[in-house]
Image 1 (cartoon, one colour):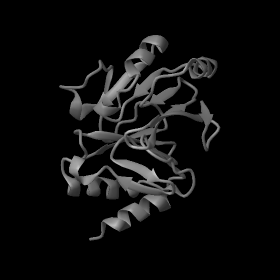
Image 2 (cartoon, helix red, strand yellow; image 1 turned 180 degrees about the vertical axis):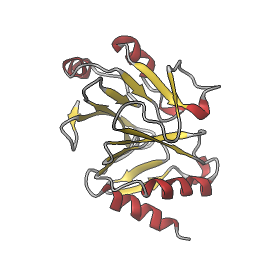
Image 3 (cartoon, one colour; image 1 turned 135 degrees about the horizontal axis):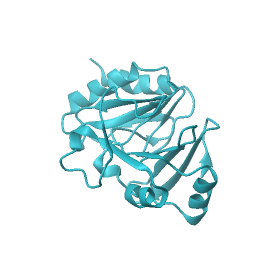
Length: 201
């Protein structure tokens, strides 16, 4: 796994040829049990690295399209799985926790619920008030610039934009770690603010 902008954060990625972007997963190493976000399959190297860093006690999934390797890694590590409360009735993997707006499944991890994306109640997470982790709705196909999921994939574009406006007010964020595309490691709030400004209105 790769070191990220904080000593307690690591990531691993895979390149998606259909979209010409990377998909990302994040590991937060913390006292009381490590947290994985939208985990992709692990290479042997990354699995060994995860073991050395203490494994995982919680896997959080932003939306049903980002289940990825959560079930397999949960079985391997014994981690609990948490998914979006709004998808509880149809979620494709078994979850021990269902999360929504205002929840804090571990100290220092805030949960925000987004509306209007392609799945109901997509989640975003803020680590220690400084690092925003997103799933599908907020992404980055070009380095240094955030964008939204294409409008034709959104259930409600205006509600999606309003969710991102509200999310931008939760900062300041140092970094925005997107599930799809290029992460933003500096001035995360500024780059997110540029996205919101582009909405107009």
